[in-house]
Length: 543
Ligand code: PEP
Ligand code: MG
Figure 1: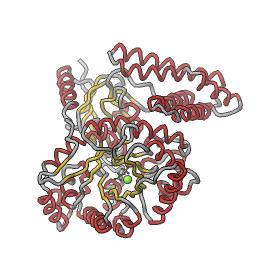
Figure 2 (figure 1 turned 90 degrees about the vertical axis):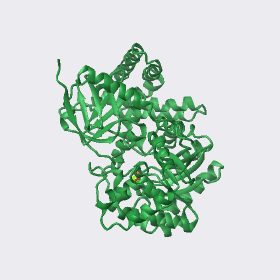
Figure 3 (figure 1 turned 180 degrees about the vertical axis):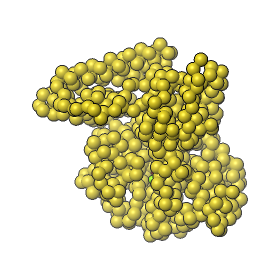
Figure 4 (figure 1 turned 30 degrees about the horizontal axis):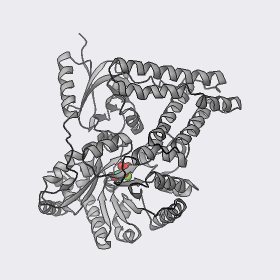
């Protein structure tokens, strides 16, 4: 009998997952000597990806996973499509780099698909991009083996939030990351998807036995490889039970004393949007548009934006849809902006790149025209930034023949929160980003394993939130909280106590948050928040 191996990590998204271990890191490329790909090598790379996807689809069918097999079949067809292979081979013949030629051919075909009026066909553009990226990785020798058929647990040095989205409907049962903590974006997306995840894990997990059965138990803070048979059976039963535990919320939420509360969800993908809506969210309060582009080699085109936005926004007809502009900051900086100082990343980069803001706004207006659309600006530091976006939004709306939607700002920089009254007349709503706000106020790095949503209960953070809520009230504009503290059982009542009545939380958290709101008396919460604001030391808050 094999002895179980145990790897510890910090639980950043709760739950229990069972599946084969999937080591998702690409093989070490340190000893490779890249050279330009030939036309034949490009054709061979497409063929290899087509074969791989066809084999995976067969395996999935053998496991009775017909729906997933059909999705993978489409990828196999795309990888064999002459309309994609031809332009890539032509470009290489003309002297282009192989991986770049494949990606460019993928982008061009994705753009054609994204422009189609049928949302099902438009969604295929994402599949084309994934295939092109797999072929490019294959050419660069940087592709990890594909995930196994059936349920699996992803193990990586640094789990990428885009990985979770890509694999969410392909058998992903949990994730283990050696890097990161509870406030890193992979953890945020894992919570949104309801996937168990450990971060800051013991690095020896990277040498765990690939393909072996494992249990990911976040209550114990462990990944257990080769568990004993009875433990595996019990864990499978627990995982199945917890998958059915999140019953849908009521749609309309009220506190115990009858105060109406609007509950929305945070998403970066169609999978999370479906999950949030089925859990009772009335719409999306934060669409993180940058997550799909964190590996991008340049600014997304309007067609690239449309391809990402259409699958999400087509689910939100008639519902609130708050779409945030690209926030390429912190742990979401793509390679093409990575060399810049932090101050020149994020919003500053978007505003200084000619035409990029216009491209994203046009795509948002088109993809969101049937929703209750609002545009949200991240990491705002000055009123001038708001004015620039407002002017660009007015111009894009005029071009599209539409009325400009509401424009709001993320309040997540301490100085902006402190000056909320100055920003209020320039915007239609505030959305408080407790993740960035808390880490700045407490002087913590978001990637630090010690950073967690509950730290927003610190009086220094709550004082700023109170100020933002009051400034919104005085100016008569809306205010919501979309940082992860809104789904934290310790902080949520305090936010209700400070007067917040709109929350946007990770999609999988909607039912639990609705339940907690329904059990909270707003007057008692106000008294509790007042006590915390008077607390002499943060330690007392937690007690
Ligand atoms: C936040 O900072 O609270 C927030 C919602 O933005 P993000 O987590 O995407 O930085
Ligand atoms: Mg933020």
